[in-house]
Figure 1 (cartoon, helix red, strand yellow):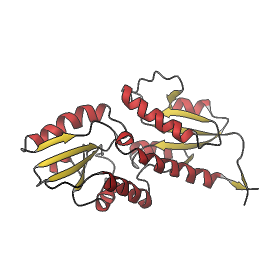
Figure 2 (tube, one colour):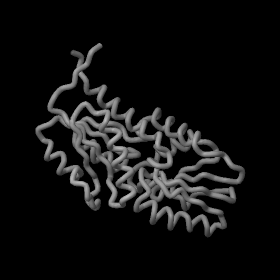
Figure 3 (cartoon, rainbow, N blue to C red):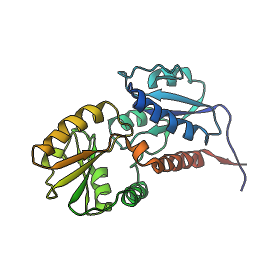
Figure 4 (cartoon, rainbow, N blue to C red):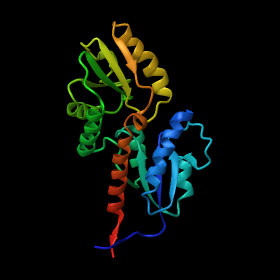
Length: 238
């Protein structure tokens, strides 16, 4: 079957954004990878109003939507879960792709990538720290944890999976930020509060000083798959 795409459409790739130089570079690399797959013009937007953006190609989500009001918009989120930022996108009533953990199949692939890339070591517990939320369910993280090896756990900075409630028997803990980039929350809360919390428990703590897009670069393939699914829903038979 042959498909054609309608004209007058635009994809907006949306992320929370980062005013950290290294974090912004990771986001830009992911955006470029996704843009290569788009048959439509691409715009970029941040949902965070606190983000200081030196790149003039990025605007706030509201500004971008307003600038593209003559186009039919498809939204590609560079987000991890169905949290408040994703709900903000759905509220626009535009066609929107899934976030990273937006389906059981996605969670299975994320778990597979993590399981394959972390070497099992006796006496070592891997602890993945996500941001979490006090308002939004952590069910997606619980599903992911159920798919991970028994030496890998997930905890959050906020919400009902708080790292403060994590019980770890192993002497050594290696922490991975489950954030797209190693920016503000990772450099301050995880490298500071979380590491200190487990050190105070007498653990030997190590930390990966990079975000998901750097620690597990093949995760971009899941975002690409989400974009392709959005495009497949959009095509019309000719």
